[in-house]
Length: 193
Image: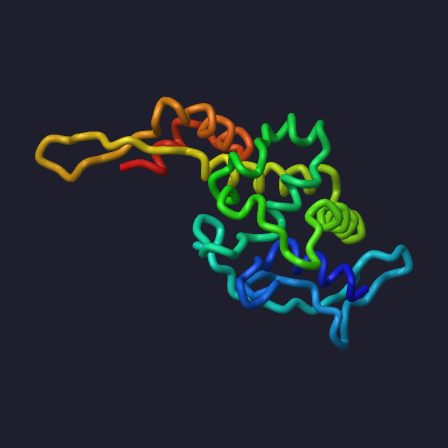
């Protein structure tokens, strides 16, 4: 019911802002407001209405001091099983650049481990299959690893300087590429000049 709507909205489409726990951003969220979703005899959603919110892409890569990025990243890092952490090659939150500034920040009323359990429950309640759940986890982890990629300047004669992935962060690039389902060389070409 309403709890599932709030959980799905809360984990993927919200972040912690200094003034608000859940500042709205753009995401397609199943609405429980009338007429709300309709369910068939098997309990599957047969009709529904969606509400849209504005997503701030910049919120993933930068956030002000005292703020957190999207809750789902902290939930994944705090609640993933040892097997999931191994498979996704997750580091400690403090070691992933996108969340490192706020990794130790505690927000009153938010428990990332409980949030992860609730998010997993919501995915099952919405009947996301194992492959779909794995795709979501791989994408989230891929984004975290992509944030750990560092770049070096490349001097190009008679042009503006270019860039390349630093040798030290090549393993993060390869991990991000694998998790996102793209080739590492293609990903590097897309990210560099």
